[in-house]
Length: 127
Image 1 (tube, rainbow, N blue to C red):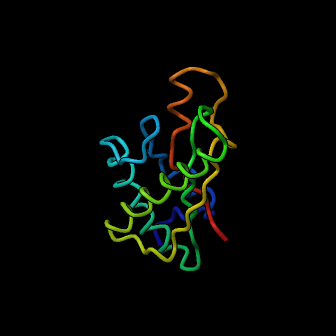
Image 2 (cartoon, rainbow, N blue to C red):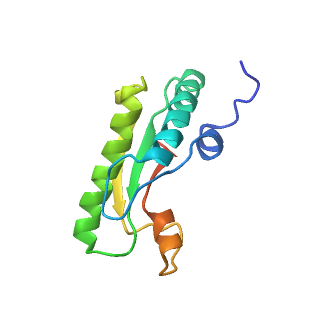
Image 3 (cartoon, rainbow, N blue to C red):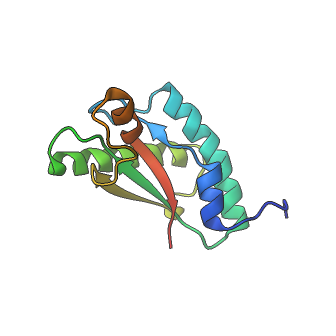
């Protein structure tokens, strides 16, 4: 035991970083690659500490574009992040993708810096 178990939720919030995406893209760019590589290490430890846990990979978008389009884009972003993690050895059956499109923004200003924060793959504890 590492002595830093905490709850599954607290570990997900503290140990897993968002992966950010370019506008209208689900390509894993360099900063997202670094975040996801770090997350892969953290996820392996979380799954070791919480054997029954699963993690949601959420796809999010900025406010531009239709709700329907953004749901599809969010799904592609979540899948891209999940596939990248699986390539790094994270168990596929413990990662579940969900798209929220533009329905759960991290911030609500109509500015590029805010839109960038919303174009993300975010991680939450599953059931």
